[in-house]
Length: 243
Image (cartoon, rainbow, N blue to C red; front, side, top):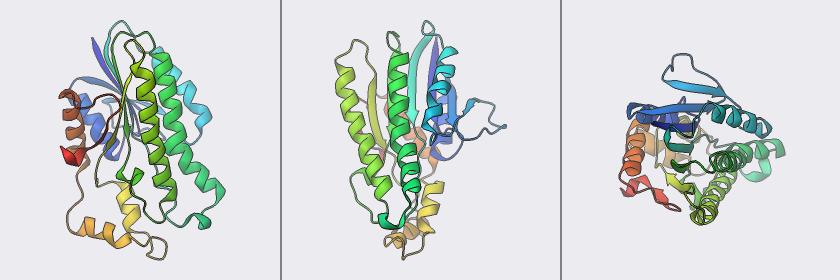
């Protein structure tokens, strides 16, 4: 019987940490990302730019065509890919840049979750969706309007879908996770933003200089442990720093 993980952005940062952790624990790992990395032989990689939302359905259909519902024991989707977007006040950001960030952070997960639920309907295996969200869903940061708004949308999506799926026999369990302050490209972008564009930049510089950033590997291990310990219950919004 197979344990299968489908993950977006599985070839770098936290996504890569999660891919390695799940693979180490016997999962077949399938990554959807903008590019393929040839050295990642442990991952099945599908190239897809999630900002081009019209291309997502064909990729997910292709992935499911290579899965077997009769031999799958666990089927998990992790919506990990995200984009901080342009860090500036909203009036200084172009409509296209606004649209791009919302497509990647919110519309793509909505589409992926919709397809995952539809295509796995009737499967008898354990099914779970893990949305990688952020404390920015609750805490407004100036110049992060798109990121904060999209992550708040992800959390509300989680709450709504959990209610919908709770009513269905063997429905999909869905959770949102705040990974904390992880040492990723997103943190580098934040701390290298000019102060005139981002008033809180010093806070992010301090995170880095004071060694407060957490390695993606450590966060991935914690998320996996929460999974196997049964902490990822349907509808929960969790911050890994609380465990």
